[in-house]
Image (cartoon, rainbow, N blue to C red; front, side, top):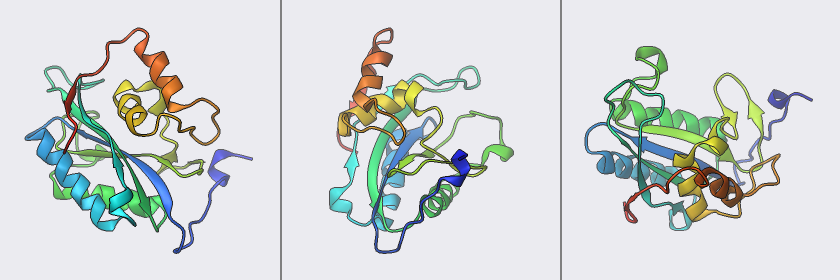
Amino acid sequence: MSLDSVTESVEPSESLGIGIGFGSNLGNRLANLSKAKKELLKICDSPENALFSPVYETSPLDCPPHSRAFYNAVGHLNFNCPAESILEHCHRIERSMGRARENDHEKNSPRTIDLDILYAGDRISEDAKLTIPHPRLRARLFVIAPLARILPALCLPGDNRTINDYYKELTLNNPELPVVTQQW
């Protein structure tokens, strides 16, 4: 069975735990993350149960020369709609904050906000619009470090290693990322 044939539909009464990566390296980076967080909290099931990592400052990865450092964080929120709907909402937030989509600018160019769906419950899928779990999640310290702070025992679908296992592996040869703030 191919990955794209493995999809689960989410009934309106079901709540789906979705991990979202936040990134910003233009303008007031902390304010950008906070604004995107507030917009997502407006549509999640139980804002009081949402989990958010501290904000980390990270070097730009595969970005144009002289790009500013990123502020990165991760959130885990519950939603009563499919991941594709949350992806569309994330794109609306990005556009409302001045982010052009990939075909409108250079790949990995600086951005006011970047919102990525990292995982969606136990779902595994790969299609043109959305691949979950995120294909590069396990190799990116700027995602794994914040995720390890809020869900260290999480095992992604199809994986028997925890997020903390990946964190330990990634920090063997890399310095720990500096925390900017716990509250945002």
